[in-house]
Image (cartoon, rainbow, N blue to C red):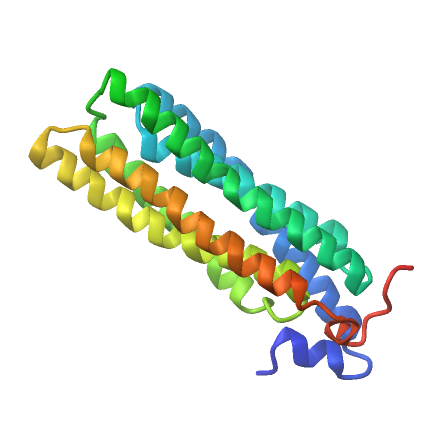
Length: 215
């Protein structure tokens, strides 16, 4: 089956591919916004740094996909600017995680391992769904759709780490697994931000894939 990029390049198929791309990022944005609320509430209930950082990550993902939705069809210069903005946005969860971890060092609290694990499993399911949806269209929107895909892909790795932290917390009854994973999410997002920045810098009008750019 042809991918979204091939469909855009094929005369007469561009409209359908653009519609599919817009529909995909809209669904992904809605899923991320919904689970942001779930994870943020859970993080507050059990005082989890990892869940807090990941909840902000869901909000960041929702923002990225909404920006992608708005920027589709723009010129390469505009996409480049939005791509650089997205790279900055991707850093936000990491900064939040480091700050929260620093505050928690003064009064460490052991989060409930069952809640930590179950919420992590739910987050993994949401992000796997989003990553699979975006993988099908990641080549159709230049750095913008690539930013959305990279963010979802990295979130899958973070969710696996959160689940592992839940098991480790149950065994050790220590706040350290949660703290370490929270800071790890910061490092992961820093790498993703750099990848998105590089992709944005390499934007060109050849990435329009036959779409008419908005002047």
